[in-house]
Image (spheres, rainbow, N blue to C red):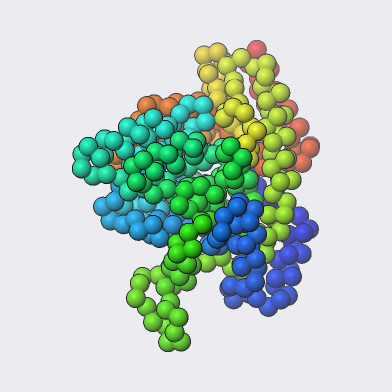
Length: 371
Ligand SMILES: *Cc1c(COP(=O)(O)O)cnc(C)c1O
């Protein structure tokens, strides 16, 4: 669905990092990668970390989120977002989606904030999530956060390269988090970064990520630390990938247009997420209205799987996950509806023409078998 897209330049970059001797584990490519990505996104600081999840965890700790705090987040997300909130001892409060994008519903968010305030347990932070490469309405979310004095840690794990009103994903909130997991828009095999204009937060994150060592020779500790830094070899891979980010996004966008054309005449099927103009087109999904289409997303998924083609439902909302069943949720039914009607299709930039033809050929075959 979204496999790593690694070329010769990436292999040369990792080889060069290895030859440089900077292996154990920090080095100049880590610093360079942080500077490159911070510049690309338009923020002052980047802190390269071992995963996006680690970046969420340290971002929350850096914003002083801890036991008993309420943190609002999107129900329609990958579990990592909610898990990171729980790592800190805080309580996730899930907010449902707007139907068009699947991103957090800002009216419901407002309602959730006011309800928690009225109950005397105001939320401390919002972790909005950019679903499948489309940014949330940060204009609205930042305004709400400012009005209610809430911190914002943006989960931009899926949206690197996307923009909101011309501003880059990864530049919003008090800090943003991106992921370089193998299935994301660009990869370091595994990795993530915290991006922020807040120098103190960047320093605190770097400190916590390197075992919270005081700057003395004998390993003095006054805080519980973590071992969350990205290695120099992987940072070298990331720098080479970043040079190809726009090219990889262009490929994914072309694939989305291709799917749009293929499904344009299919009744009951629409491309998820609307306009792709500011989207990084990380994953392309379809929404299937079963009664009009005459098939369910599961039937198409099963058919494709039988032909060795991966497709998946959208994220199962967190408020429907057994592990988060006891957490507070403000729902409107949209995330559940998207989960039940959505299917993401092969979207990776590494897909070659013959593979794309094979995928769309099988989809056409499935659709013609219905008639
Ligand atoms: C991938 C992802 C993460 C976690 O990133 P890792 O690098 O895999 O730890 C967090 N949030 C969202 C929304 C993601 O899609």
